[in-house]
Length: 131
Image (cartoon, rainbow, N blue to C red):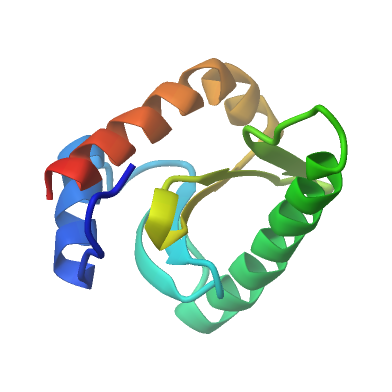
């Protein structure tokens, strides 16, 4: 959980502390705010305008699912959306600041990394809380 609002510089530092120089990833890993405004991304990503448009729709899906589950005993941990040849993993990493980490990759790679993604989110959150 983030103790104080962070600026873009602190968010980028926390993100880089976890991902390092992973520029050649066969995935796009993005950090954005709750409006889908891109704060930082690494890997094979679409241009910023296309990416931000997509991010805002993915976040709306996440928030709508979260609201529906809030009416039940279920709690949304993360959301995975599969399209024809891409898979999107969406998770809230911001606590009070409401930031999202969205990972876009192929179904084969997502199946391999899915068990590790929650730990990645936890590491990003820890890095942000130190910022």
